[in-house]
Image 1 (cartoon, rainbow, N blue to C red):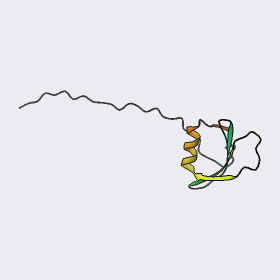
Image 2 (image 1 turned 135 degrees about the vertical axis):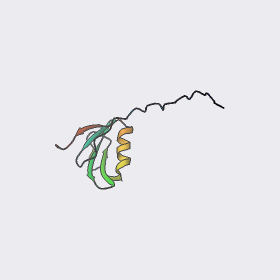
Image 3 (image 1 turned 120 degrees about the horizontal axis):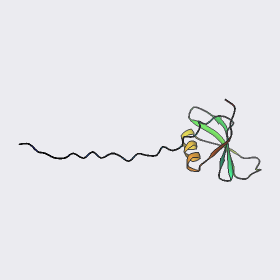
Image 4 (image 1 turned 90 degrees about the vertical axis):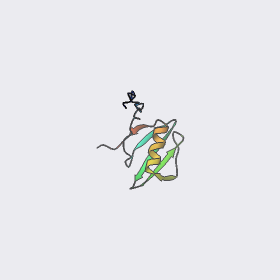
Length: 87
């Protein structure tokens, strides 16, 4: 007994690739909204950074977070790289 059934191939919707950010490096400045983030040091798993919320803010504490979390934060807030060290 032959069964003639049409097989419909369903393609997954193509996911738009998010604009990839540059990898974190020591000394980078990122503009996030009205504030800035200064990458102080990048290690194997953690990144130390300063989050300036005001334009001429001084004495900002150094924070430490997982590198992946920092990159996700930058993507989520549409961060723009302001200053990077020359390659």
